[in-house]
Image (cartoon, rainbow, N blue to C red):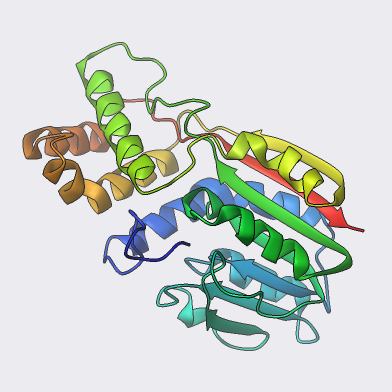
Length: 264
């Protein structure tokens, strides 16, 4: 993830933990399906970029076993530190600024990272450079501009409020340099980076308990900034969280585009 002085969803906030749990519940099945398809197995050397929480790192560690290695990096490693035992190494690293933390990786993976990194072109180059010939890169990123509504079925006041608060979140993200249409560009960017056998797909949950949990966790994490920027009032944020907790709305996450390819 990008430097914490500019990253809206700061890892140092207490609310980051529930949000990581919600992200895992929403996106882990898709991520694990892709990693399985790439053949991750015993002895692999893997770099998990912008790890955030522990779910993907722990899954990779089980797959590579004692003969493999999983390097988990982030600019703030506090949430992933509990996974730091063999074969997992945790290291502070800014993928948009620092040199790759090694080369010869069989797999490099980043999920919901690069759209937040102003130096995303350099970061992607760094990730490709770290691969061995034949190594796999899997990049998964949201594309909020592809479907900007949290309630695509905007049929009442609760849904209208939810969409207005989502627009406020998108405004805050854009002000901090996030590229809200980055996900759709991934297949082309991977090909331009020299990868081959490039493929991609999208995951777009529209209604699920995990999606509601993610919405509540995200709004709680940015509540103060929404209010300070006058994008919502305290009463509106509280009302939206109450509406989410009611379970009566169909809440969508932004589409997550997964793109993968191999280094020649």
